[in-house]
Image 1: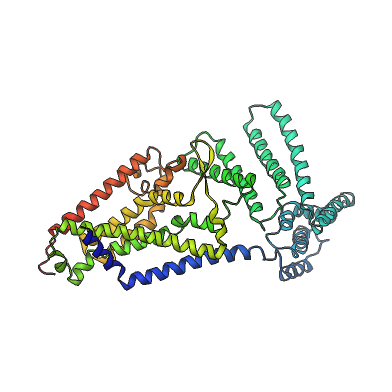
Image 2 (image 1 turned 60 degrees about the vertical axis):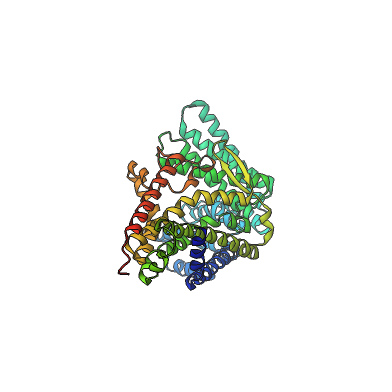
Length: 483
């Protein structure tokens, strides 16, 4: 049996097509890492507004009359946009100044133009102008803490007002949700000041703090609803997980969730390149039997002193070994390419995950984590490979045996989403909701109600057995006299 497997592996890896596939995989890995790095660098250098856009706004303004009631609203709107563009043209899109200009100063500019052209209230205009000039001075002096302290003062006032309202109406859930949101914003602003994290997205910590606020806010929205669907529960848990992961980075001054590091890209290698692994498995499995019959070499294969069942199983096992070799090759290539592109220093970091069982952060060795993910994805690889192998055996048609499994894999997410949307509970007996065991690790919520890891393994085993038995029966009964 071992000799049969060895010969099959030699046959598989001696094909020119495998060399071509290897080169394509290398190109994809290099391209992914380089583009990821380039995109992250380019996002920091784009100017927020161009001179061409400002000239376009000036042309629009020249066609409008601020003294004409038909034009006045459009004039104020265009003038506000032009003032905003002129203020922001000297800053990049990801700078802290642009975040403040877009969120804090933009409404002030609109107020100034409203008081000057619509309400014509000079007293209010002068008050707002004074505040605007103060903010512009803070922008020029790179004084982002001015805005953080101002935001903190406003939040404290709003929280005090809400506290007094909740005292009068303690059962009002909307008020409590608003208070939660304000306290989250206060935590974020306080964290900015304590950790010296500027606004904007020029550095990872600033992106992390924005993501923490977003995911935690989303979680609060879901948590207030007591009648969530399974899909909504999954989304709620996803937001809770991401919020805690970013929170861990922020409070511990680490960058585990930084996507532009060798560690992050390496730990997500299997998930990133899973489609490539699947395609390699399908291409190999889809021609294993059909190719023998189409070339007529099956006669030479069957004259050996082995039963047809052993020959078939040896071929299937060689497919699975190819799967393992492909996965290891991808991990090795990603490790090397990622290290070259991002630097090898982050490989010393562990992997951080959120455990729903204990509602706490856990750390794992990166290789132990990758091994766990590979085991969880094994049912996908095994079932897709076995399906291609079975189709190759039953129909002796390589294109069919390759195309159908790839189509099935690509449409699996769509099938699951449709089933969730239309509440097709019977879909849980199908393979696609069960073959990804990673949904269960760290206390994760399964895709469908009523399934468990034991249930999923059983379903996958049944489908595997059906395809394997069908392949064995077909191969044993296949007439080779006319081949």
